[in-house]
Length: 170
Image (cartoon, rainbow, N blue to C red; front, side, top):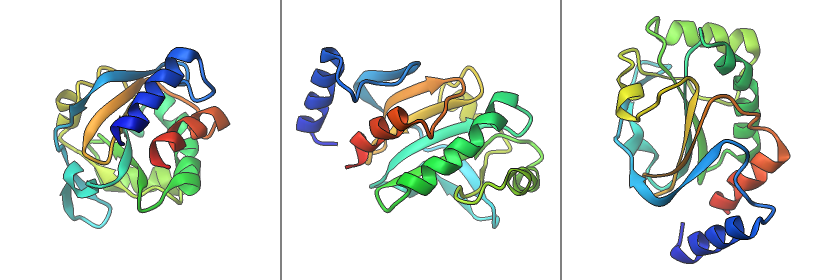
């Protein structure tokens, strides 16, 4: 995000514009570097958050045993279907100790089709990213810096949420 875009966003938020952050979403005054937590993909490849350089990322830390996480997952899937591109990706990072098989079963049961499978079986990402509750979602700019977060579940497919997130991608 350019400095001009950031300045416009800050002005718009202060003025109560239509692109104001949705309820519970906290924007940081200064973007903060994000630790490149590691994960395994659904096909067993290792990766870390550095793999998404150049993209705006909505990083959702969740688990299949977390009821609010389970409830919001279809809306994250719909958001990825709507905004997913070379410039934006929803990264649903599961901390299930049972690994990819548990997440794959959940995706199949709930018909999640647009999200890729990422798992941190160590759960170290929770501590590294200072996530105190599940789900926790970080908005990360294309330079790998956290620009905001939401603790708890949300309707990621809500038109206001989509417009808000789109303002960081366009």
